[in-house]
Every structure is written in C-alpha cells, then in structure tokens.
Length: 133
Image (tube, rainbow, N blue to C red):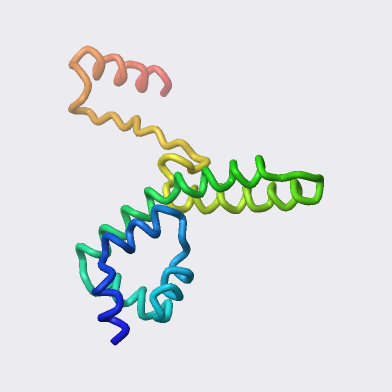
C-alpha cells in the first residue's frame, strides 16, 4: 500500500518537492509513508534514482535562497543570530548536494600527457630535467 501511494504521486512530483527544498522526511510524512519506504522506492528503479539525484543537485538553489531569506527576515539580534546559523546550515547543505556550484574547493583539471606536447615542448622538458641532475 505504501508503494502504491508513492507510485500514485510519481517521481516527477517527488523531484519537484526535492527541488523546492523539502526534506525527504517531510515528503515521506506528507505521503504517509516511512523514510525507509521512500528511500527504498527511490532506489528500486535506476531511472527514478537518477532523476532524484539530479533533483537533489537542483535543490541546492533552494537552500541558497533559504539562507538569504533567513538573513533578510531577521528583525532583531536574536533572530539574526538564529538566521546566521540557519544560513550556515543551508549553505552547507547546498555544498553537499551540488559541490560543483556551492563547494568550497575549486578543482582545476590541468593534466597534460606526453601526447599533448609538441616535439619541441617535449625536448624542452627533457632538457630541463637533465639540467637539474
């Protein structure tokens, strides 16, 4: 019966909820199923699992906007302190769901193989190596 509830809503509905920033716990509660049932339903189908993974990446925008809104809505020092903590959590969550856009590290792929070099560049590298010895 729980699986039928999820089948009835469908993966598109689930992805929209995730993109809107809803937690899987709140999604499961809204459907009337356990978190484990929701997780198993997602994992049971490769395409559904891939779509949910993409929705999680897209949800990072919602966490970013929640962080900004929490700070903007603070009306006094206490609310501002609370908003800062929430904003920090939302940014952390965004960095985990979409590390390419919100992660702290920027990876630069600068691998060069021997086949990428011209003969002159190769000769220069070899000469530089031999001169160091």
